[in-house]
Length: 341
Image 1 (cartoon, rainbow, N blue to C red):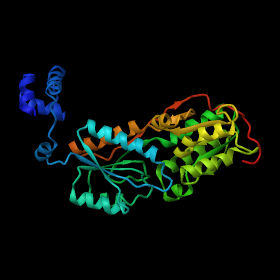
Image 2 (cartoon, one colour):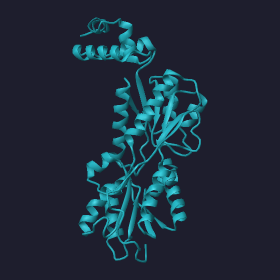
Image 3 (cartoon, rainbow, N blue to C red):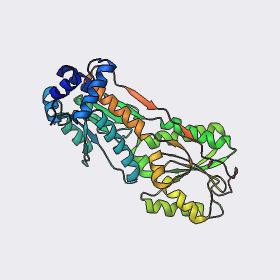
Image 4 (cartoon, rainbow, N blue to C red):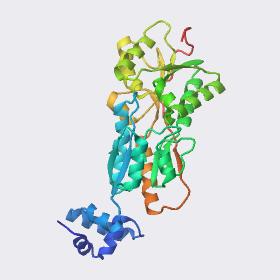
């Protein structure tokens, strides 16, 4: 097995230079970095994480504190976990999932035991009890979510308010006067999930500004029930003329429901949605959409956390990922809703 000394000899540099290239802690010329990286590739050198941990007093592991809500659509959550794992691996870290039912207690244990170098908190609530242990004993942590008061933690998320505004504007610009917001199950909002509340509030506010009547439609909690619910919503003569979908299970089930009912998105009913490109590839979702950007959010979260580990000082950071709308032509359709919904 190749050692750092072997890499140094192969590249014609000192072992410390190889270490600096690997850690990024000192500026190294592009030519030197190229020689080192080529030597690493030729020798198939792998960093010994245990040795690095001894040298740096780090575990080289990041904890992901995850809570599953009852309406969670697992394929969508998986896109975030995969993106976090990819970003962590690129930064030289592994991930440890922390899924205890008492998430606040789990965060407290992580802070006390320090078996991970920092924490990434997913499914953030507006009044999230997991923040209290961080307020009592500061520990490197990044929220993937944006509550009103993130406290001492850094926070990064998609700008869900801006995403909602883009989709509402898209419908209003195409002459729609009424639309149905296909939401998550009511308990998601009651629990205070920030992504759902920020989207819904902004959607209604912008719809009111544009004179678009936006009617809420709460979804059930399971994909099978969501599919049946959508079939009921769209199967009658009083079906909505336009759907604004903020529910991953609904976005995934809707193409099948439309096909079964003989309806065409963009002709018989307008459909716009918020979902990730990866989810769209899994379920062949063809709608005009705002990309939920799990990759960009995950990279931002890991970058914030690893930067905090390298330089702990500084005020907590707040970053919102700018949303982007992709027009696939499904936002057109009948401009006026039939009475009833």
